[in-house]
Length: 243
Image 1 (cartoon, one colour):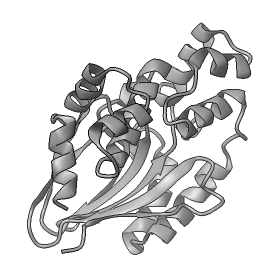
Image 2 (cartoon, rainbow, N blue to C red):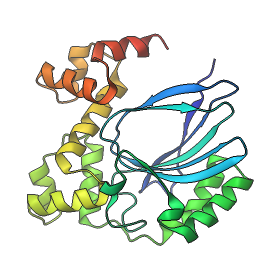
Image 3 (spheres, rainbow, N blue to C red):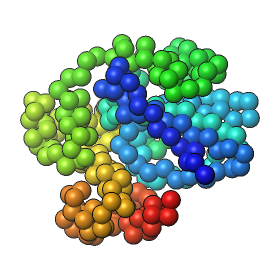
C-alpha cells in the first residue's frame, strides 16, 4: 500500500521560505497518525464531509496524535523556521502546539486562499494561492539568514557565532528567534538536531546516528526521542525498518 503522505517541492519562488508542500489522504477508513516537532510552521487546508478550513499550525514542542476522518484530505505548506516573519502576527509563540484558523489572523488573505483551494486541490495550486501573500514579505535580513544557517546545520551551528553574524548579542538573538519561530534558539537547535537524527534511522547503527547528529551523550539521544516521539530510538528504528 502506498503511503497517504507525500511531499512536493515548493518551486524556486517559495523555496527561501517554504521547505515543502505536502498532501495526505485517509482513504475510506479512519487513519491515526503521530506528528513530531520539526521546528516549522504550516498552513494546513483540510477537507472532510463537505466542509473545509484553513489553519495555521504553530511550532510543536511535543508530539501529537491525530485521527483523520474517512475520506479526509489534507493539503499543507511547511514553512522554514522564521518563514512566516511579517506575513502573520508578531508573536508566533501564541500558536505553539495548536491549530489557529487563518481567518482569525488574516481574514482577507484566508478567504482568497481558501476559495481557490475549495475549487482546486493540488499542491501546485496551493503554491499559486500563497505566492502573492509571501511576495509581499521582506527580503531575508541577517536574523533570517542566521536562522537559515541554523536550519542547514541541522541544529549544530554555534549560537554565539550565529548571533555575532547577525550583529546581535546572544540575548537579542534569542528574543528575535522566539519572535520569528515561536521557539528560543536552544530549543529550536535541539528539535532540528532530533529531526535530523529521526531522518537517519535505518541508515546506520543507532550509535552511529547519534554521533553523526551531534549527540555525544547517549542519555540525551534517548531523552530527545522519548520526549518528541513517545518512543525510544530503538523502537522508532524498528518501526522504520518494518515499513
